[in-house]
Image 1 (spheres, rainbow, N blue to C red):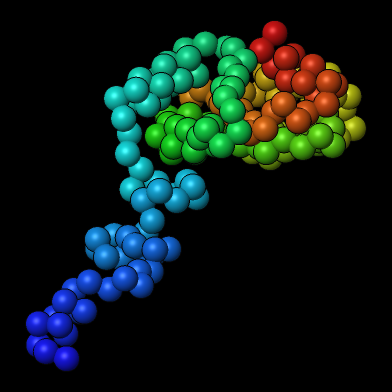
Image 2: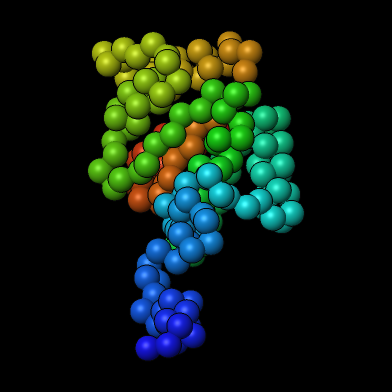
Length: 165
């Protein structure tokens, strides 16, 4: 084999490690990974608008905000990036919904997530009132974020609606 053939063989290798192509470009991770790692997250002007709108809605309103889209479209990534941006200015409690999440469990988790007093002896209605009163006395806004909220039972969804009533 000539020196030219060896050079060409070295420069052009038809057996590429396609799974780790990003190493070739000096990247530390796959830029198209769906893991939600924010190390190389690009914020387009459109997403920047979404973040600004979400921030305004969450800081200055008492509302129930639903972010809906097709599965795999980036809702959880949007949530993670948004929370990373606002967590210094807001008290945030994050939950991932399940169909079996009961109202008492929801109240216990929100009490823990927001560092609120919780009394299991009280009725759910009293617990909700107590938690809302405690949150209302805080200087910073509070944000409850529930991923996959569509999985919640009707009873648990009604309890959530009570929060914004």
